[in-house]
Length: 90
Image (cartoon, rainbow, N blue to C red):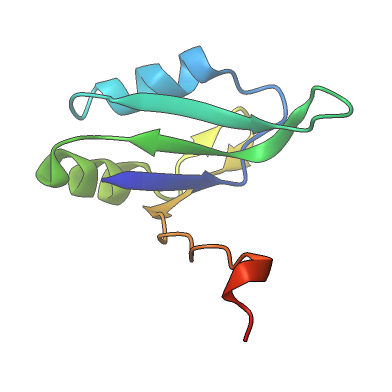
């Protein structure tokens, strides 16, 4: 299950995030979204956990937790809608 983690402090690292989520189960990936121009965190991340049950426990436990002075928000990530190409237009 892919999770969206919002309201991260700009100084929170992927290692810290991994440690928080690893307590609740297996992590497939953990990526903090970075600004391409500044190289700084945009304040949100995606965490993938292969086992749905573990992901749900992580959501329940970590949503609203204070991490580095920010109350993080954790929820199931919405599937991105496929982008339409110019060929799709009629």
